[in-house]
Image (cartoon, rainbow, N blue to C red; front, side):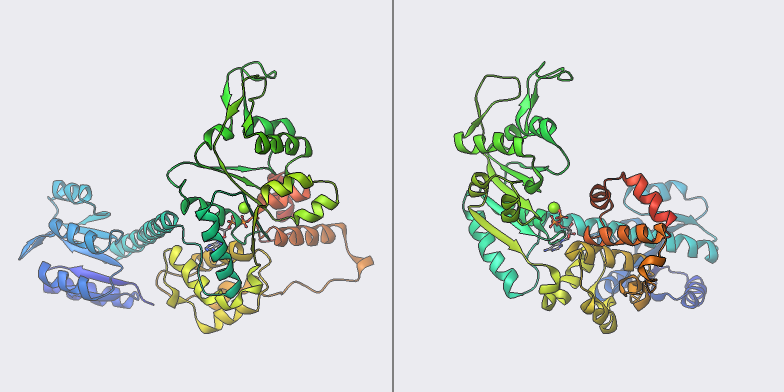
Length: 440
Ligand SMILES: Nc1ncnc2c1ncn2[C@@H]1O[C@H](COP(=O)(O)OP(=O)(O)OP(=O)(O)O)[C@@H](O)[C@H]1O
Ligand SMILES: [Mg+2]
């Protein structure tokens, strides 16, 4: 799809030169000789960028910036001013123009300007779409039966105050669902405090949850509130609860039973009225069997269980989800051809919706603004790894590279998670990826 320019310029020969140059450059151009024509075009046509002269027969171009912004808050605007009109150009920038050029305009320089300004416009659009979606926290996209059942349960969870346990593979949206429940609950105007239990061990985790008083341990140089305190009247979201160490599990169980807690090093009992939501990608019952998770804590946190299915089990929702994600990335869904959709359909999506989102994000990066996504943008999905040499002929580097790729796949492409599973730092992981020529 071509990018379309709204050119507002009263001089017919300047317009002619512009159209000749920029049509060759692949732009679709809508011409307006005055502000009235420009307003009509903007209301009727899709415009990706505006090139605006200031002195026009029916008014001042600067006033048009406001009209354009009301129609599309992110549309890039380049102002063209006369040579001595710098103060006007400054005013235009203050009123929301993105860039300006002085006459006589060199079309080659304007072309560079336009492509840069278009890129900024796309970024602005993506940012604003993201903000809008974050505000709305849309979660239930599509009509898959299993997802609709989760939706019904999630509504019930939001209407109640009972502890909820969200399970599902990595990238299925457990964190997003926890926030959705909070935002749809009566506690929405208070905090949803999140803590990832897999990042902190033992005392560090207790400190985060309970807080401490000055002198409770060597580095405790001041009183510090815990997350239980911050979650008062709101929601406490404990992510990856399956990774909570067994000693902290005992302390936390006590909080749930007694409805009170103490900061580390303190004797005073404190109360916090929080609603608990937990999530884990582990099978919590297996952890109990392995002795890694307390059965009595499972009873407390699992009053209602919401299981998010893997994406491969909800492929009927793929078009709706893809279209939603493309929009949230500031694009439109019509840039994905049927052939590309076929490629997405046959891929098993081990990293689930997170992986789908990053694959689309990458594809958009490889696609010029307004163009259709090419199939090659999804070439990394095809299982085109070189055939494995016989087991006993493989080098250490090959085995390492393959293991790293498998762990990365399992972590849905999340470098931090993969590094943690491999028990190496992110920097080391990047280094090894480079050494193994692995692009991820
Ligand atoms: N229902 C959904 N709608 C739109 N985007 C989604 C949805 N579910 C997940 N995503 C996308 O996937 C990303 C990962 O979601 P989230 O962090 O909630 O997954 P998770 O199940 O908590 O993963 P992990 O187990 O790795 O923590 C989100 O940032 C979002 O971009
Ligand atoms: Mg998560």
